[in-house]
Image (cartoon, rainbow, N blue to C red; front, side, top):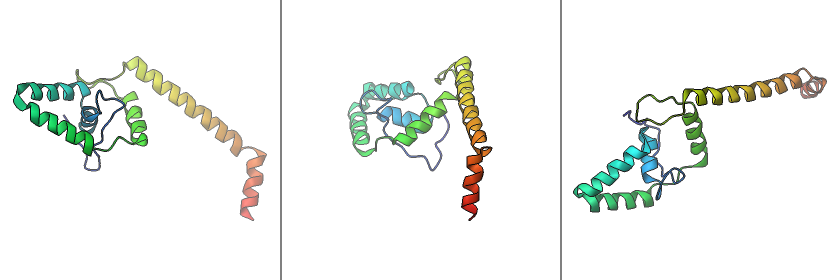
Length: 133
């Protein structure tokens, strides 16, 4: 388990959560699997810390902010390119990751071709000459 960077913020992640997204947010913060955090929460509830676990979960669901949309985009982009490093970590198969990377590179190549076509066009030269005035 790797430590979270100092500039990282703990959020609830209702999109990947079952109840209010507290376990999913904790898992994302620490970079571990959601199911592992859920098992720890249920185990602590069943092993005699039920009241404390319930109070902590309710408090966290009320105190923690919902994960912002831009963070969700970053999180999903990171997941698409992450290989399984440990047996319990989720990740796409290597074929799926390579396919995702290939599609993104194809998209970037198309955008690059469009930029190149614009930069070499007469419209770009005219616009540049107007901007020099």
